[in-house]
View 1 (cartoon, rainbow, N blue to C red):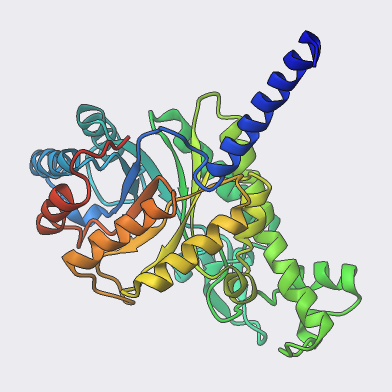
View 2 (tube, rainbow, N blue to C red):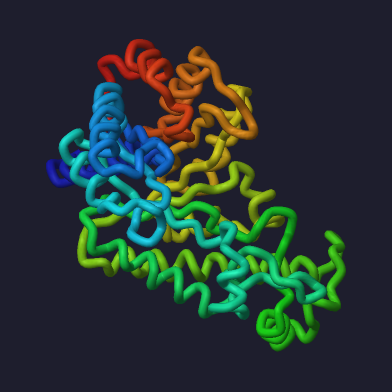
Length: 358
């Protein structure tokens, strides 16, 4: 082998090593980056009185900082979303900077709305059942609704936040789609049949198209939000809470998060893995990683106390360790209400000691 051949061989080996190493880190998309540790934060943890809230926030964020909690997904944080008479979002941001914690406002387009208010202001935006009765949820298949959410989320860009976090980015559970006139007419133009004529038959092709079409409408909203975030003029990340089972979420709630991940529409997903079964927890992590195809990071949601589970100190340590074994490089705890000092003390000693968070 002459010198030129040796040089070519060295280059080829180097290139192959790069691809091999990239493949090893495909699940997390990270190498030596510090670990993400997040908590879902509710406004109910803070007083309506500004001075007391500031003291509560200082104490809580100090606890978070001590165990390396470094990101907060914050419900109802923007003006008009809560009843606080003080600047709650900027209080979060200021205290977060002091403690090294990043703030992500939460938006939940598919969640329950004030039906009486919306019947007056936006009656055409509500989901309608097959009899035409309004339900207390926005119809995400309505283009006006999607435009509203993109505009509303864009208002958060003026704050010094780390990103946008989506929750309830879906239809209500058990295949509750909208049968309003606009939705029915739009679907009929494409498929020559109104959804009102379609039976809930899993073997029916047109029913499958109805499910697929509604999933596509939610994905269109995610695309709009993703584009807005990318054009925000500042580095922001976009995350989303998703149902853990990718097939069920697509069929039941029109949440086709696998396509969001593969298309790179979001930066990370938080599968809501609220279970006391460690092996089920691991299984769903692996499925989410496979579904994301290396384009989106997976930060599993650990349920501390939810309607599905009530975790022990020993189990929370085990589930944190499983996220590391599966190389997710992050996790999120639901929620701030139940993620108490006792849990944090346990994690500080048994899971996070000597481990860097970011």
